[in-house]
Amino acid sequence: MRAWWVEEPGPIASGPLRLGERPDPAPGPNEVLLSVRACGVCRTDLHLSEGDLPPRGPRMIPGHEVVAEVVGLGAGSSRFRLGDRVGAAWLARTCGSCRFCRRGAENLCLNPTFNGWDTDGGYAELMVAHQDYVYALPEVFSDEKAAPLLCAGIIGYRALRCSGLPRGGRLGIYGFGGSAHLTAQMAIYEGASVYVMTRSAAAQRLALELGAQFAGPADAAPPELLDSAILFAPVGALVPVALRALDRGGTLAVAGIHLSDIPVLDYQKDLFQERHLRSVTANTRADGLEFLALAGKIPLNPTTVAYPWTEAPRALLDLSRDRFTGAAVLLRSA
Image (cartoon, rainbow, N blue to C red):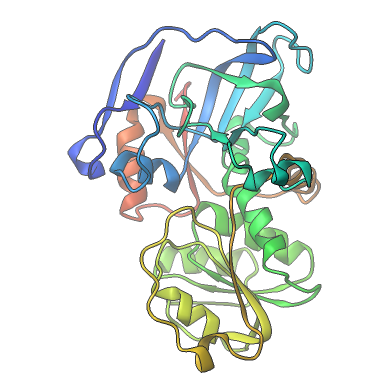
């Protein structure tokens, strides 16, 4: 099969990705073989390519927003049939036996694996995935529109729940890319008022088009104090900015897997009056199932930019330079 892999992590403009031939993978017990139809381009793929997240194996194939067709079944695999359209997401496997898995917090598993970080992902013609970590996809979404749901959407859903947003509350969103623009739609659907702070003028316009009450620069003060906020931009300097925009008792959820250094916090200005600061770590399979049901019900309208599968490096370079709004998707047919 043909695939893109990280040859040597480095700045994306230096060409850390290589395109070449790899042996076709074979599904093991309880695994499915997937023919990739589309793969979303996530900022985590960029972090992996540039070394902010060191690849956990040589020549790692990125990609964890995978829309695919089941073309092979490993021994004991019966959850899906050949020809089914499915999605593979960030979470590839959990141990099922640690204290976190036993209490239903598998996102905190002590021995997890992740697609496109620990195991080869969807920047390839074929990939394998465990049947229990693969999702059926709502038919309302095309391959292109379904791809960003599988990470941007699921993580956005978990971040929204972690933010503790009360019904009808005021939500601040910092950064407005693939995950944030889906999260805003979910919050508005559930009755929230949304305030978006982002450096991109195009993203500010998109936020207003989607129904946000306010859109301004990343360090802007929203016109009202916030009940909750989510930081999607990987910029630690925005943590105190967002905390100071919270009302008493508000929560700031940090959604990224990578974040630049956080400045020293001022206890009185940033945390006092029971403001909460928490991170968001991966997701559970239950998050994925709940989110996809909600996404189909709304239905969400992902803003996507399609790239031919052969132009993965350009898509990542454009992501690094904020050249598009919404989510980029690699299409095998493009």
